Image 1 (cartoon, rainbow, N blue to C red):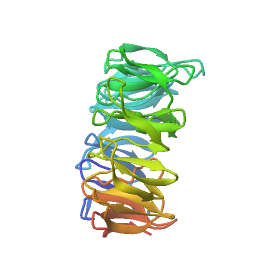
Image 2 (cartoon, rainbow, N blue to C red; image 1 turned 90 degrees about the vertical axis):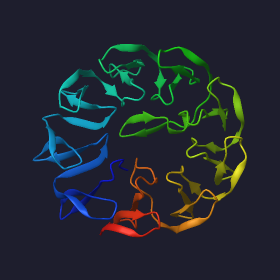
Image 3 (cartoon, rainbow, N blue to C red; image 1 turned 60 degrees about the horizontal axis):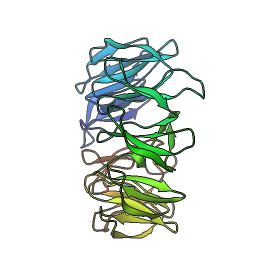
Image 4 (spheres, rainbow, N blue to C red; image 1 turned 45 degrees about the horizontal axis):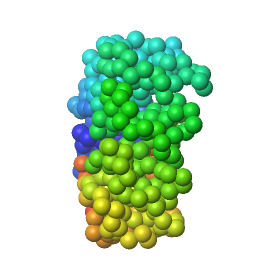
Length: 325
């Protein structure tokens, strides 16, 4: 959710924002509202795409066809079917010219120039200059100065921010997902100098030299967060430390990454939360969360679905601070 501690809510068909206590701090006046990112939030007002600051002040009002949140001071916007970028003043920094874009990470954004299957991914800087030529059939965002890239044979390796091949394309990778039509590689990112990769059908972890640090013995492996990573064997999930040691027993039906000391677990069809000691502090009671929104706490608040129809926010004790029936 949101780094500034403001969270979108709907009241009588209009959207506004609450703080971590459930207090309404930006009145519900918008047709729609997204989470804050980089101190800005994308909202719909009078059928126009706009951006507001954390005080609720309208900073950018536009006629864009579509738009994405701000990251590293830049937001992707769509004009006549093409994507470009604006800054926080609403000024066009990179003219709309790309077919598909991601977001800026480590100062670079992955770009696809045209909509053909043969077109490849590359990376531009914040001036729109090509820093890494479009040579990759698959490509991920940068994380800790490294990006996962794939070739035509579906083999994967890593490059640095100058495009140098640091780890040759020799690994398999099964973690590709699509969110809002854009491929993402959530488990392939480096975190704590380790990245999950696959060899055949098994997951393990490599370091930034491409050396295998944790053998590929898992059916699934996620990225490290707060010193632990989710893994599975035989349909059950648990957590390992950077040495590969299982520190929370493989016993759950599903799990998430740790955030603010807690991680989501799935028992049957319901979700709850555990500590780093494996203690259940919020018993499994919630339904599947909204697509593309991770079950991770930010500013001690989390968006959950109580059932198929009602959603809201809870704190780290499991207390409901706001609920939409």
